Every structure is written in C-alpha cells, then in structure tokens.
Amino acid sequence: MAPTALICDTQPWKDLKAHVEEIKKTHLRELLTDTERCKQMLLEFDGITLDYSRQQATLGTLNKLQKLAEAAHLKDKIERMFKGEHINSTENRSVLHVALRAPRDAVVKSDGKNVVPDVWKVLDQIKDFSDKVRNGSWVGATGKPLTNVISVGIGGSFLGPLFVHTALQTDPEASKQAKGRQLRFLANVDPIDVARNITGLNPETTLVVVVSKTFTTAETMLNARTLRTWISKELGPSAVAKHMVAVSTNLMLVEKFGIDPKNAFAFWDWVGGRYSVCSAVGVMPLSLQYGFSVVEKFLNGAWSVDNHFSSAPFEKNLPVLLGLLSVWNVSFLGYPARAILPYSQALEKFAPHIQQVSMESNGKGVSIDGVPLPLETGEIDFGEPGTNGQHSFYQLIHQGRVIPCDFIGVIKSQQPVYLEGEIVNNHDELMSNFFAQPDALAYGKTHEQLLKENVPDHLIPHKTFTGNRPSISLLLSSLDAYKIGQLLAIYEHRVAVQGFIWGINSFDQWGVELGKSLATQVRKQLHASRTKKAPVQGFNSSTTTLLNKYLQESLDVPATPSTLLPKV
Image (cartoon, rainbow, N blue to C red; front, side):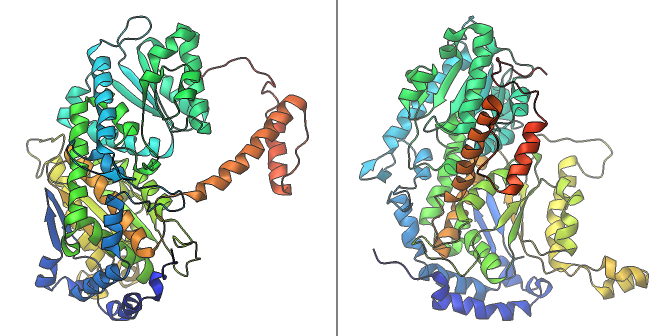
C-alpha cells in the first residue's frame, strides 16, 4: 500500500493555516454576540448537551474543518474501524472496543468473524461468576463470603475501571447494590500500594482479580505474587484457587500460577489496554462490586455513543466535532494542553483516565506510515473536579497560558443536599461556578471596566483578564451508569478522530517500551550487586553515581530475604 500524503500538505490544512490570522483578529466577546452562531454551536444527543460557542471559531472555521475531515478521509477511517479492518497497522490488529458493548444481536466483525457472540460468552461467564460471589454461593477457603475485591492491574487495566468505580460509588442505584462490599485497585509496584490495599482486609473474605492479557506484565505479576503470598501465608497454598481469578488469555501461565483456568476471563488482541474498561478488565471487578445489571447499563451508554459516532452527520456528531476542534486548538492555534474540568466529584478520576487514552494514543512523532511529522500531535491533558481546581490552577488558565478547557456539568446531583435558609442548595452552588467560569474565560475583564469600578491604578494590570480563552461545555442530564458509559465513549472517539485527522496510529504505544527495557538492565544490576557485591557497570556516570548511592544507603536490605509483607 502506497504511503498516504501528510495531512499538512493538503489544501484544507493550508486554508486553515491562513484562516488563523482572521480568527486572531476576533475576540470571543464579539463572537458571542452572534446569536445565530451560538444557536448553531449547540448540539443535543440522548441527554447530553454540547455548547461549543466559546471556541475561537466561526461557522466558516467549522466548514473549513469539515473539508479537512474530507481530506483526511475521516468517514472512511471510522467505517474501517467499525468493520474490524486492521487499522492498527504496526501491530496488525483490528481496533474493536466498540464490540465490547455491542448488544447480543449486533454484528461486529474481525477477520471476517462476528466477534459479538464471543464477547457475550465472556460477559455471561462474568455475570454467572459475579452473581455467585455476590449471593454467597461462591465462598472462600474457610467458607466465608468474599465481600472484598482487589483488582491487580496497571495502565488501562487500572485507570479506566477506577474512573468508572469512583463515578458509580455515589450513584444511588449502584451504591445500594454495593452495600457491604469493597473494591480496591492495586496498580503501582511500590510496596506502599500493596500496604494500602491489604490494610484492614482479611484474606478469608478477599477475592483477588489479576488482570494481565499475557500474564507476564512485570509490575502486575509481582503484585499478584505478593497477594498470593499474603493469601497463602494465612490460609495455605490451596486457598489460592478460591481467592484468586484472572482476566487473561494465557491459560497455561494462569494455571501455573495456581489459578483454575476455568476462572480465567478472556479478552482479545483487538482490545487496546486503554480502551479495555468495557472488557472483562473492567466488567469483572465492577460486576463483583455493583452487580452485572448496573455494569450492563454502563455498556449500553457507551454503545449509544458508538452508534451516534458511526452514523450521525459530522456537523451533528459529538465526538467528531470535539475531535476537529481539538485539532484546531492544537495544530492551528498552537495550544498544547487541555484541561478536563468535571463539576462533579464523582468524576474525580476521569481526567487521569483520559490522560492515558489521549496522551498514549496521540503522543506520536511519525505518521501511520512512519514518516516524521512536521507538526505537533496530541495534547497535554490534566484536570481536577470543580470547584477544587479553581483554588489550584485556574489562576494560570485565566491570566497565564491559554489552555482550552472542557467543562463537564450534571443537571441532577447523585447526592443532593438541601439546607433550610440557604440561598441555593449545594449542587446549585457548584453549578453556579460551572456556568460562570466559561464566560469568565471568554469575556475576561477590561481596563475600562476596572476603571469604572474605581480599582486603584497600580492594581489594574493585575486585575485585568484578557479573556478570549476557549472552552466547551458538556451538560449531562444525570450521572448514572448509562451516562458514565456515554461520557467514556465520547472521549474515546474524540481521541480517535484527532488521530485520524493527523494521520497517526492512535492505537499502538511503542513509546512505553524503551524505559521498560532499560529497567530490565537495572534490575539485573541490582540483583548482582545485592547478591554478589558486583560493581555497578554498563551505565553512564550519572546513573552509576545514583545507583551506587542507592545501594550504599540501603545496605540493610538482605541479599536473600525471607518473606516480609507490609504491616500497617
């Protein structure tokens, strides 16, 4: 297949580059006076409202972005993804996380085979197993019910499920289903994370879910062995089969580890780690905590957006519009970052998850054909729930660097509070800030306004806000399992749209490999130095110095230690 042309060489890209000068002459104060423009920049879909009128864009900008999408063959790329073509070319794989939330009667093919029946076979296994654990028909080695779950995994095996778990914790339906149960996530290989996870738990009532596709992920397997030791030390080695299950495809290593292969729940190579929360990776621990019926609603929410993404015209397509506007902000206006600002504490783990989805997907320096790119791709994602972020980094986004912002609000609180005599209820107070902040960023505050307020001259420069800082507002009707699924899918597909436009592979992650391979060399050195007093060699002088200091100041670490587990 002949290499494709770089998107920056196309006429629509050049037209947008020329258009930037026109936009720079226009302030959002002016753009927001155009009522017709604002109406056309409002989109509603299935309980979600998107307002993108505070983007530094005109209707003409949007038309030019639509032409860019045509030049990038965006429609064709989306269709190829849904058809199961191997769009992840560097790994020769389909990209089919959409199949994970497809209904039973749907047809989604990979290599000519409908994979939906395989997906539902695993989902049915998860439902059956989680029901048994939850109703007490599957018990631990001593006959006690398993009310505590530790999910062991890292990266996509951790961030996505943690986001959904945190969002569901205070949902009335989900919290009712989770009564008397605990779900924890062990990701970091740092022993402190182990200590925090097992503190207060009894092995007799704890089930461990080990999440590793190959069952070889270094951090995950060391943590799994640690918890296996914790269980075995208290209950004996035979207890492992009752207290540990796996989400993996390597049944041989699962069995060798001590887990019954019948308790291994599969997923497939067309599921990327950061897109795996809708697979057994997330569905298993979440079903154990909340019951499969709640998790199924989450999957249905994601599927609703999948359908919308694959079928809605681009001018009415939520993920497409968001993706195109992100490309506009990054590649044309030169804004390298994006702040994700959910005005809901339940979404406190959303930004960390999207950090991985976005930055691991689109942090690339070459095209899908391996050609070095003369343009920047990806953005730096960060965020905190409002109003916490307002008291942290909003100073910078108001008066420092320009950082496009995503404001996410919810109409109905999961946990409303009303106090007699207060002007507004707690949720209204929160949402007052949700509505105010985008306008503050857009309009700013001028020298003239400050003069009218009799601000002292010497303070005017400090209290001036330039405004003209872009944002989008997403307003959700509620925040239940269905809406959480929708929100996830919107951002997943938005990231894909950006990658499709830039002409990169958003579904591989070779950048994470180099550090891991160098860590192998360090691991061997530490072992040799601890056990044989071998000198540090084969590293540059800086690393050699630091390694020697580390070894010298940790001489109390035994060379051949007996088992020691955290005591907190």
